[in-house]
Image 1 (cartoon, helix red, strand yellow):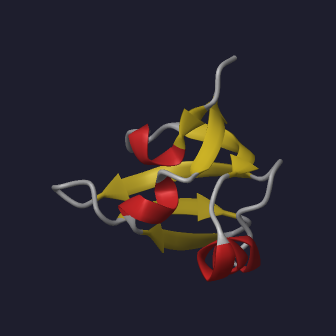
Image 2 (cartoon, rainbow, N blue to C red; image 1 turned 60 degrees about the vertical axis):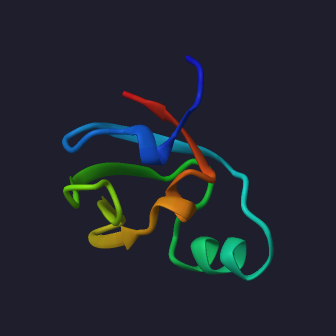
Length: 77
C-alpha cells in the first residue's frame, strides 16, 4: 500500500503513521504529541477549508494544522 499524507484523508478514514517528514521544533512537537511511526488513528473531522483537522489516537483527540498534517505519511486502512 502506498503512503498518503495525513492531510489528504477524509473524516472517518483510519490509518497508521508510516513516516514523519517534518523538521526542527515542528517535528519534535508532533512526536511529543504521540504521532510516531506505527501509531493508529482515525480522522474525526476537518474544518470547512481543511485546516485544522481533528484525529483520534491513543484515547485522545488532536487538532493539526495543514502544514503539520501534510508532513506526516500514513497508510490507509
